[in-house]
Amino acid sequence: MRGVRHATDVRRLTLDAGGVEVGSPFKGLRGVLTGLPVRSLGNET
Image (cartoon, rainbow, N blue to C red; front, side, top):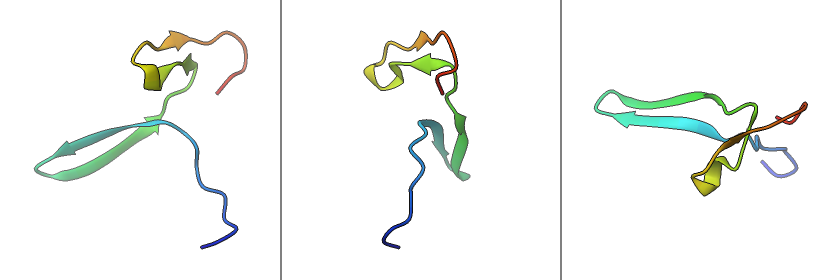
């Protein structure tokens, strides 16, 4: 649908014979997509 805000959270996905599992969003980390996550200080989500 146009005009709908999509989630921008980065989440862990697990794929196996049973299907796809979408995990909870990464909170308190930055740099997750770089492969070098670092704990965030402050209220970053």
